Amino acid sequence: MEECAAKVALELLLKYIVALGIILIGLAGSLVDWSKLPAAMLPAILLVIPAHEAVHVLVARALGAGRVSVKPFVRLKYLLVGVAVGFSNPFSLAKWSLVALAPLLTLSPLFLALSRLEGALGSLFSASFLLNTAGSSGDLVLLLLAASAGPGTQVLDEGDSVRIFGDRPRPWAVLLLEGVYAFAVATLALLPALLTAAYALRQSLVVAGVTLVRYTPTDRGFQVSVETGVLAAALLASLAFVAVKGRRNASRIMSALEAGCRS
Image (cartoon, rainbow, N blue to C red; front, side):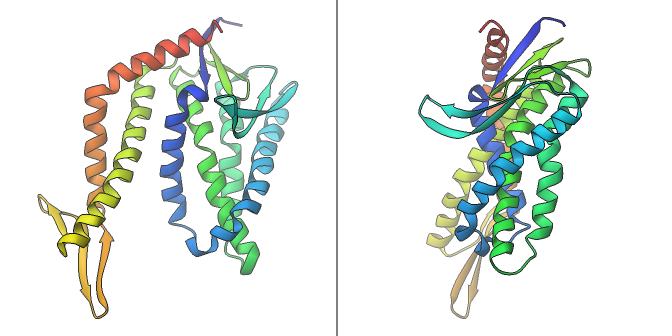
């Protein structure tokens, strides 16, 4: 086997994983009834975590995985974030991609279909769809970095990190993750600020002909709604952030990835 080129640890990439998870919640949330979610969150967590990891294990074993290890993923030595499943032997990038994507491609469509059920089961599967989709953000971040290293890469999945053999990940992949992080932060910052401004001014907010927030008088008062212009503004802000700070941040992450092989 070639020498380790990079060690990609979940803890190092946690801000990117959380940011992508927020974006996935927004996308997945448009497909479910939010009123069904609150009461079903705890049972959905108890369902999704073992089901998600079981799918990883089943697909990995089918593709020739050796010994499987299961351990808690702990942040800062005391905060339990989730469960990490690792394997004793490396996979080709193609096989590991199947392992990484398996829960998103199998469980999320299944949970979405079952979310149409009535009553408690519909609520359970709506919440499960949302959690499984958002919970795949870590798999997607690791996959992006591994795939950027090239098709000849081999990946050793250690659960809370992956070791990449062959070539190292490319800086463009980290820059893309910086953009995802900046977009999520900008969106979360702009939404409450613009909604509050529209409410205070009692008018729609329009910039350069683009509507950010629409203020509509109604018989009972008024309605304030977010328009797609907010996402365009967040995208512009994220591009500016990447242009100003992205290269420096990407260089720091790349150095940490390479240094991880020596740990």
